[in-house]
Amino acid sequence: MATATAPAKCILVTGPPGAGKTTLVMRVFERLRASQPHLSIRGFFTREVREGSDRVGFEVVTLDGKHGPLASSKISNAESLRWPTVGKYKVDVQSFESLALPELQVKEGIDLFIIDEVGKMELFSSSFFPSVMRVLESNIPILASIPIPKIGRDIPAVARLRNHPGAVVFTLNAANRDTMRENVYNQLVNMLRTT
Image (cartoon, rainbow, N blue to C red; front, side, top):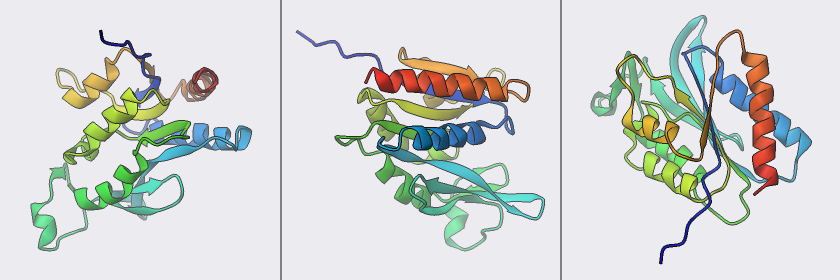
C-alpha cells in the first residue's frame, strides 16, 4: 500500500522580463533573514551583469555570497563555442552547476529553498531540473521564480512546476509589485509555520 505524501509547499513568482521577480525574491529573503534569523535557507539567485547601461550577461549568486557566471554576450573563447545560447548570451552550464547544484541538496534542518530562477538558461543543465524536483518532493518550502509563458509556447519543465498540485503562482507586474511582495511574504511565513 502506497503512503500519501503531503503536497509540496512551493511559491512561484512569475511575470514578464523586467517585472521585478528577482528583486521580489531577494526582498522577501532579506525580510525573512531579519525577522527569523534562525531559519536555515539555501539556494541562489541570478543577477544581471552590466557594463554601463548595457546588460552583457548574468551571474549566479548563492545566498551565502559565492558567485560565478551564468551567461555572457562577451565570452568568445574556444570552449564557449560549444556552449548553448539564449538570444545573444552563451550559457556557462558548468559554472552554473558548480554553484547552484550544491545549494539544492536536500538535507536535514533546511527550512526553505530559494531558486531564482527556473528558466531556459538554467534548464540547459541536465542535472538542474531533477534537483529542483527532489527539493519539491522533499516537502521543504520553496520560493522560486519562473518565466511567464510565451503565447503558445511554454517550457515543459516550467509548466510542470506551475501545474504541480502544491504550487501557488503569483504573477507580478509593475502595478502590483508591493502588494505581491507582501502577499508572497505572508504566504511563505504561513508555509514555514506549518512545516
